Image (cartoon, rainbow, N blue to C red; front, side, top):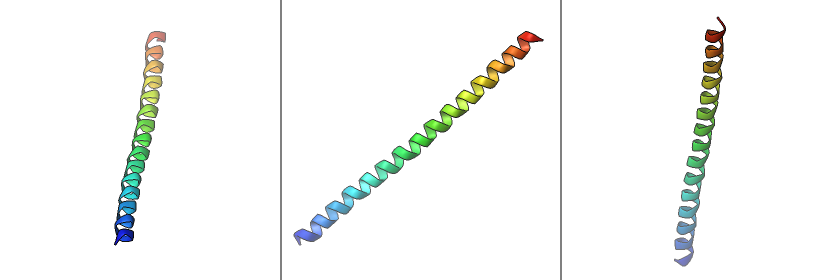
Length: 55
């Protein structure tokens, strides 16, 4: 009985840890994509401004 409860608790902990890790990983990718998008957008924006000022 104690072994079954222990196993259940362990599986619960591993499940929550897995979910936490998965969400953390997903958020990391989300932030990476957001950062890349902002970086590209800002570089395009600055290039566009430079073009406008040049011509």
